[in-house]
Figure 1 (tube, rainbow, N blue to C red):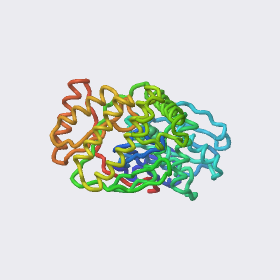
Figure 2: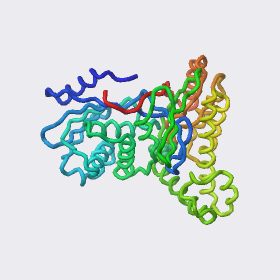
Figure 3: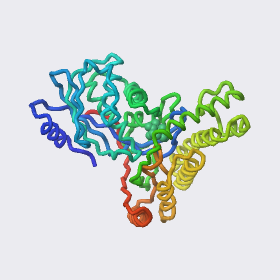
Figure 4: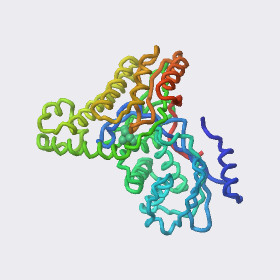
Length: 385
Ligand code: GLA
């Protein structure tokens, strides 16, 4: 699953020619186990980093240009380093890289001309955080060894996405891409920005299943959800003036203030507050090896995203319901932003083959296409190769 350094160097040389030996960087995508749409409400999330990752090969260029080549798209974007602060988004893949370069310059790091070759194995649009993997691997390539705190690296990439790409995302994807550790999940407290490594029980296969659809409304719906959570906070402040985000509210407090919160923001807030509680319960269940409780929490998370938060879609619901009908499946739910992309499934290792066969057959019969499967082995965070 990982890409060999020699292959990347070869690709770089083939594309850019020349004698420079490129430096190589890797940043992983992620699957979120639980804690969905809670990060921008400063709540808890529990993702794992994937072996699927974005690789960047980079070498200095003498002409003051950033020359960014995506081997996945087969396109190059060139931009002079000098004009980086005035760069305008182009609404394509290259904005993630230019946005990161702009943040690096804004923070006062040295930014020099470079040739960059990008090769990602994280499928785009699958909800596995191909964007954060791209941002983090390119940030490392552009910083070129200048010291940076890991948290500052994650925040820099998040800011690039929020301010240049225009996506008001939370911190989960960039954070886990930087901080992940092999073999374990990372529980992130998105308010304190501290994290804990959470061991996962043995006897557990984690599979992401790609619905192969990405519905158009995902970007605008994400913004709507961020806004609706803000409306819930404003309404709750009339009862609880100390509340700054939905993280500060318990499900019981929300219940007690139900009359003060309009219907839609109330349901959004009910998802976020109960989801935060589910992350804590899932962490405890994982630490004591309670697979049954972990599975039930995943399903409860999915139902909450489906009915209260309304970010699932027909295909994801179908994949979850089909998974739950297979013997040996411990739990399943949508993962990532929603409206398509992937589900995450906890499966007993002996049942993995039957699980794949059953979902492939059912999905093909219903939607005329085959889902893709990714075995998720928790991998390490970003770094130089
Ligand atoms: C996207 C965002 C994350 C997070 C998830 C939903 O992946 O980038 O910050 O909000 O959606 O949990």
